[in-house]
Length: 262
Ligand code: HEC
Ligand code: HEC
Ligand code: HEC
Ligand code: HEC
Ligand code: HEC
Image (cartoon, rainbow, N blue to C red; front, side, top):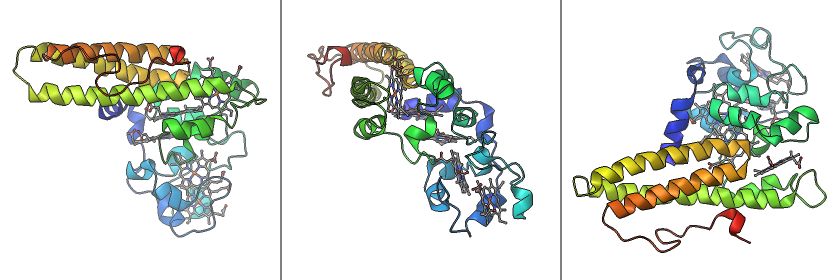
């Protein structure tokens, strides 16, 4: 989803680049093998998108990344079991939100966040992404993650997770559709309708970015509504390029709106 990733990057505050170019935390921890604790080992960090982006240990744990001595470096580094630690479970959304501002802002409006705050029964960022955020969930893996709580007799209703999985599949489908039509628009640049298609695709891109952000409010209807708008605009762009209107689930096979699915 290149355009969504770009929009998220543009929406983020400057905090994103706050890591130090050289972190002594990384230098020393690369030599430690037994410090994984309840969280993650050094290897997991090294393989993560955060390591690739230069986001080092202190970005989430605090401490002094210029100190070469462990005691000095660990000033302010607290175990995740302590309530004042930035990686204590209820404080995680704030810690991650320093860089992922849009996701955190929508997340704070969700029932998940309300429950995390009130009785600790809602998920935090790490519940779904893992402490190293090694991957963004696919619609298939999503169900396994959600069913830790969304299960018969659990703290939350199982159908919410199934509905979310369908909305996430729509996110994927509309992004693929966007890529197909954009490629065609580039190939027909300068043709009749090309200029109009470009404007429509710009609108579609905004709807897709909005849907990705709204996702973290977990109000599935809002996300699905933005996706429907995106789809309609992409189809109009397709027609502006001189193609005939696709049959329902025409260009690319797109699942129906989740609410009407069963
Ligand atoms: C000179 C080596 C060294 C440096 C520098 C260092 N660490 Fe450590 N760190 C260790 C060792 C060894 C342990 C395990 C023993 C301990 O808890 O002191 C550890 C433990 C930890 C733990 C687990 C704490 C717990 O309560 O379970 C965290 C988190 C951590 N370090 C983060 C950092 C961060 C963040 C930095 C940089 C700001 C850093 N470390 C710098 C050697 C280092
Ligand atoms: C993107 C944020 C992030 C980064 C970067 C990060 N950690 Fe963590 N780490 C966490 C979270 C969150 C936990 C809490 C455990 C959990 O909930 O999975 C944790 C837990 C730990 C633990 C287990 C001890 C505890 O307090 O639970 C150690 C040790 C640790 N991290 C070391 C490191 C080291 C060393 C680095 C750099 C090589 C690093 N971390 C980078 C987020 C991060
Ligand atoms: C210091 C800034 C910073 C902090 C703190 C931080 N991140 Fe990130 N995160 C990044 C950057 C930079 C990337 C690289 C990709 C990007 O630009 O989105 C990234 C990537 C990710 C991705 C992968 C996005 C993708 O499209 O594949 C996820 C998921 C993620 N972070 C979740 C978290 C979570 C959860 C936490 C808290 C435990 C956290 N981040 C803390 C800066 C940060
Ligand atoms: C209940 C599970 C869940 C929780 C809690 C959650 N996320 Fe996500 N997150 C997802 C899923 C699923 C996706 C993939 C959505 C998509 O593809 O558009 C995602 C996508 C992302 C991405 C990738 C960029 C994007 O917007 O598509 C980032 C970064 C991210 N989340 C950060 C966070 C942060 C920070 C928090 C905490 C404030 C958080 N997430 C809480 C499930 C969750
Ligand atoms: C740690 C437990 C936990 C996990 C994991 C979890 N949820 Fe939830 N979820 C809850 C709780 C608690 C509620 C609120 C239930 C209630 O009050 O009826 C909730 C509510 C919801 C709602 C309804 C929101 C609203 O405003 O009506 C949706 C949608 C949802 N979850 C989706 C998901 C998805 C998707 C995943 C997996 C990616 C997931 N949840 C993972 C605990 C969890």
